[in-house]
Length: 289
Image 1 (cartoon, one colour):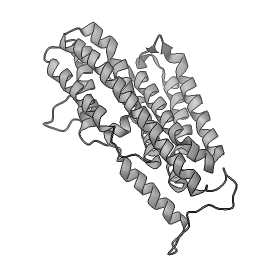
Image 2 (cartoon, helix red, strand yellow):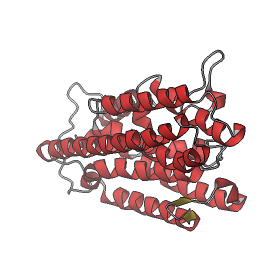
Image 3 (tube, helix red, strand yellow):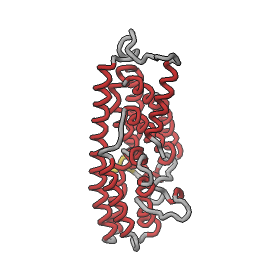
Image 4 (cartoon, one colour):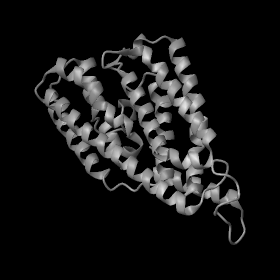
């Protein structure tokens, strides 16, 4: 699980340590031009507030969409409509995958919604999207799945409520972008996330888009201190999303099993190329506030 607030505080500690150990370390404006040094506090504070407002709007929009799509998916499962539920599964997950690090900050809610079978502790109940995925594709039966579907819907409705008051700051948002990219490299690129349906590319793309939106929320703060870094990250996202385009099919993507080893290696290289500059953002936005 990604501990968002702890990660943000960790970056703050590192940045303060780097600024000096005197009794009165200065984080005020320097004589360097904008884009090469620090910016004035009266300029950065509105930027920080705008970043939080923009990202909270994005969170709320996606949880609203998540509830909408999960309701339709859950209804199909409860009705025992296997073909319909299969068709709805990947799209239902997309809004969740865009904001996953925030969902992970709410303790047991993320495992209830999105845990994979191998992540379930001994004696715990396997629930959520992946339990229904297994029923739909491996077991080819929805017998006994109605309670699982209803609980999934209740859990995403709870998430919808919680994101309205989640504590956010620019460093937390920046760390969320890194967390989403880590999700791609840790489970999507390996094909283990949606192991039964092979719809991993839907999740992959949603993680990347979510990371890009989190970065865009804090981008003005980054530009104020390092326009070059912002441009580098923009190019990294453009390259990664562009590399996914050949695998698009209709409103979705081809099955992950259709990709070759060379395909996944090329995507992995683009993820790595983006990960390093993106990891620098949280420290920058902490000092820009």
